[in-house]
Length: 491
Image 1 (tube, helix red, strand yellow):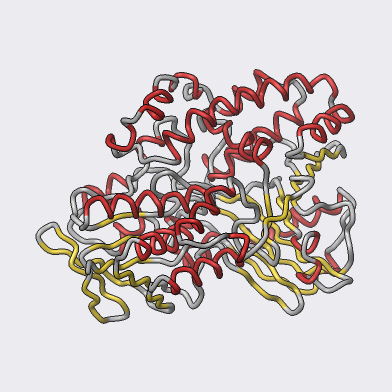
Image 2 (cartoon, one colour):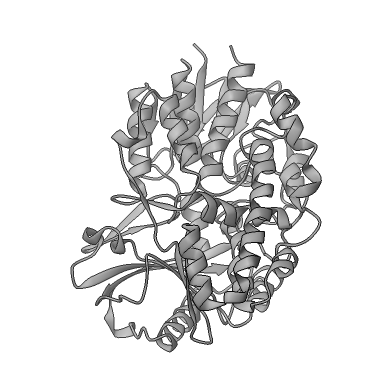
C-alpha cells in the first residue's frame, strides 16, 4: 500500500488526508503544534472562549460534500447557524449599516440608508453572480493546472465566457461603476481582504466574493468553528489516518527527483508521496533542498495581508454590536498604502470585531462578551517594531471604539495578542501572512503554485498558498484537488 505523509494539520491537510484514506491509502499526518487545525483553532481565557482564525463559513456545500465523501452526514456532527445580520458596519460619520444575505432585508436596509442605491445593488449582484458562475467551475472546483480536468463540456463553456470575469479593472474601479455612496463603495471594497488583498490593486474578478456572502449566505457553527476541526479529526481517525501532534517536520527527503520521506523530530519516516499543507514558499525556504530556482521564483510573489489580533474578555453587554462588526477607517486607500506600500501598521485602522457569544451565550459569562478584534497588518520585513505596534494599535482601536460609544478600556478582564511574528511562529506562514499569496495581480490565479510540484515526483500541496487560494472553502477544496491528483498518479 502506498504510504502518504501529510505535513501540517490545517484544513487543507485534513481534507486531503480524509479523501486519501477513503481511497484506501495509508496516510500519516504530522502537525508541529500541540493542536490540530492550523489557523482555525480556539483559545480559552478564563470563562471566555474565542475562535482564533476564520470567523465565518461560506460556500457550506463544499464542507457538506467532504463529509459525504467520508460516508457521513455533516448534520450528525454540527449545525450551521445563519449569521443575521451578516455584518454591522460603523462609519466615521456615525452612520451604521446592517448587511444581510436575505435580499429583501438588504433592500429594506438600503431604503433607510441610501435609497438611491437599491437599483445599483441589484445590478451589482447580477454582475457578481455572473463572475461567480464562470469562475467557480474553472478556478475553484477544478485545477487550472490540469487540462484533463478543464477539457469537459461544462468548464469549456465557462472558459468561452472568461472575458466576462472583469480581470482588467481593479475591485475599486468596478465597485465605483455601480455605487456613488462612498460608504457603500467602502463596504464592497472590503471583500478582497477575505483573501488578503488590496481592493485598489486586486482584479475586479474578486467581486465574486460579495456574491458568495450575500447570494449564498454566511454561517457560524454552533459551539464554535473549531467544531469543524474536531469533526474532521474524528473522520480522519475513523478512516485510519494516524495523526501525530508536536511532530515538527524538519526536512522533506528526496533522491533522484523522487520523494523518499520526511525527517520528523530527528527520525526518518519513509513515504513515497507527501501532501504538504504548510505554506508553499516556506516549504521551499526551510524544508526542501536542491530547488533553489523554484525557491527564488516563489519568493518574488507578494504575501497577503497579515494581522494583529486582540482577544479580549470584556465585562458588560454591548447590544449595539452584532456578531460581526466593522469600524471603518476614514481613508481606506491610505490605509492600504500603509499596509502594502510602506509595510507599516496603519495609523487609522479599520477594526473587525467578532463576538461569538451573540450566537453562543456560553462563550462568555452572562455579564461579559468575547471580542475577537482583528486589524489588518503588513507582512513581516526587517526593522518592524511589533511591541511598539501593539501599543499604538491597541490605543488606536480603543480610541476608535470610544468615538463610536464603546468605552471598554477599563472593562477588559482578559487579553491575549497575536502579531504577524506570532502568526509566523505558530503557523509557518510566509512572512506572517494570513492568506498565503496576495491577489494584487490579475494573473495570480494562473501563477499561484499548483497542487503538484512536477519537478519532484510525489510532492503535492494543499492550503491557502496553493491553488485555488485562501479562505475556508478554497483551502478545503485544495485538499480535494490534491487528493484527486495523487489518486490519478499513484496506483
